[in-house]
Amino acid sequence: MSSTQKSRSKSKRKNSQAQPVFEDEDKIDQIMKDITLKRPRNAYTQFVLSESEKQKSQNKDIKIKIAELTSSCAEKWKKLSKDEKKKFEKLYEDEKLKYKKDLELVRHYLFKDFNENIRRAPTAYHIFLSEKLRLGFEQHLDPKDIKKAANEEWNKMTVEQKKVYKDKQKQNDNWFEKAKSIRKITPIALFIQKKVQEAKDAKKDPPQLKDIAPAWKSLSKKEKKTYEKYAQELNEEKEQLQDLYEITQGVKPKRPNGAFRIFLQEKAKNNEIKNLTQGRDLWKQLPEDQKEEYLKKSHRCQLAYKYKKMLYYKQIKKILPKKPGSAFVQFIKEKKGQKPPEGQAFLKYWSSVYEKLTPEQKAKYEEKAKQAKEIYDKKLEQFANKVFDMPKKPRSAFAFYLIERFPSLKKEKPDALQPELFKIAAEEWQGGKEINKDEYIKNSETDKRRFKRQFQEFKKRGYYSNNPNDIEDDVEEDKKKSSKKRSSSKKSKKKSKSKSKSKSKSKSKKKTQKSGKSKSKKKEKEEKKE
Image (cartoon, rainbow, N blue to C red; front, top):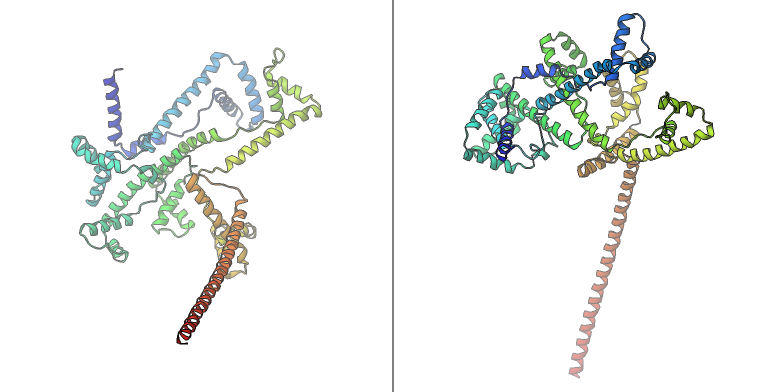
């Protein structure tokens, strides 16, 4: 491959990054529908599955025992010829290919092919596109149409016109750092931004929230929908940024919500439901077309979660210590390289030998296993101190009471639902029952101290110490600080007293010196007169 061909291929890649292809959402949903991201099963497991299906078809009424099935399958698998095994090996290869393709599709559609280059800063095209989106949003245009028009306009632009956006690209080098703190954009926030910008352009004072609130209420439904659409577009981009940040920084992904939970969250935001029972009734009444939309959303979230989880555990496997073996494993390690008699399997033979050993002989391998476990536990403690996600927020005094009270409430009222039990506990806390709140308040205060310390550590290093003794250490530190403050206050008081004493002494000295001088002058005058 010549140097000119290489440069052309590089330019093609750059153009493909700068000019994204806009595809139909329905088409993407159809592609995502067939993806499950299930790991490929090897040839032997494919054989076991086929055998279990055969037995189920032959004996529908009889329940298949897993232990019996696996033992019979193991013997049958050994007797199979190479040609017969090829059928199951092919099934495994097909599943492997599908899994790889599915991973590529998920990466392409859900993560927009984020790579090492995009991590540095947004491209000039992305800056140009964001400006066009903002202008189009003000004219109440559809974001999809704006993106298509922007793509066409960018292709027609000259190098000098593009240079303006390339200069802006250099100013946004801290793009990846912004991905850490992402909050959802609301339509009202966008409306406030617009009003503030209008005031700046007119060189007026920024408007107050009291004035903006009635202006927002007076907007028509069509105008509010444009704000909602634009906010949704921005939030989708920010979610992708958050996904990228989690993947690259090794943050443990959170399990996503299901279709019903997503539906509940939407309805609760719009104040359409007040409790769970109302939400359940609305969900049952929903037509199938609308339900399918929520199912599509949840399916996409599940695929993104599986992809992130896979990458997360890949990173963790590099750091995690290997689990130690049992006493029998230690015995097998010793026998590595020693061949068993002809016609006998390695594990079967040595397991029979191990069973015949005396308790004294076995004790040697048990001691080895114990030592290996101690080493493993020490390594695991070091790893447990490195938690990759944010520290848990501190619990309130009521939360501590609820944890203690909830099991007994459940026993008292087994038929009651969770929300009802929460209500009872809340009424008790507010004054329906006499409770010693001091203990729970103390617990919440210690938990707050724990969170503060862990959050400071997390900011500095990206992980925090997770030891239970740290809370006690915090209490001791607070005591030391308070004692230091007292001692320092006592010292300052002593210093002030000593200073006042020294000042009074110096004043008295000055007075005596002055009186002495005046006396000596009087004597001199008297002597002259004589």
